[in-house]
Length: 306
Image (tube, rainbow, N blue to C red; front, side):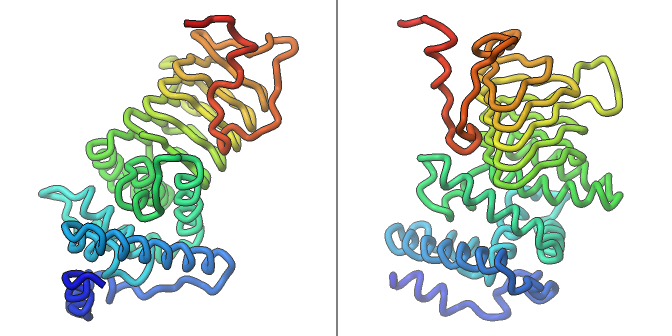
């Protein structure tokens, strides 16, 4: 082990733990989900040790964000607290808030594990789980939103809205805390993503940068899109109104979608049209949100070449 890292790890004792280490004992049950989380946390720590040994300049950073913590939820809470804090919203307050929420909610921890796996599997630029945990702002924004959503459902709405504002400021991702998001989510690059108050995003969905799930501006109430499981939404797409994007559908980059899109079909253009036509749209068998196949429809949709 690198000498600097060895000395840092030897310094780890109860006095150096973040405050929440003592306030919030782990309550993770010994379930299959817990075993998956434990395996992933072991993997993340191994990656952090490897990176600290190969790049000593990062040893202190990796120690403080990963290696000094006893669990994934503690590491994530510490990292989010430091990312989202301000001069008036202290990192210690946020750390306690995140850790208390994650520690008490096995469903949130399960979603975090599923999101880490989704990012690692679907993004070829994601070189490790620890890289995603520390550096992927789409992943971090999604985890912070999950906590904001819990606060919203607990009627702690001023705090939920304050957290939304900090997420938007820091990560350039604006998700209303009332929006419901499934697990296995990839916000790829994530800059400029906007998700409205009554939007719903299913499981195993992949959304690229500058995507808007918005309202039409004409009505209140339930006014935002409902995204089915396994959907892929390309960069810069705009989906407006209380419409449904069916399970396994694909929305092409830059499309503007104003009406329902059937399951397993592809919608492209402005305004968006179904590949293959409205009456008999072409259907695919894969799950685009997992395969990340953005372009296979082009040969059917257009004869455009450069």
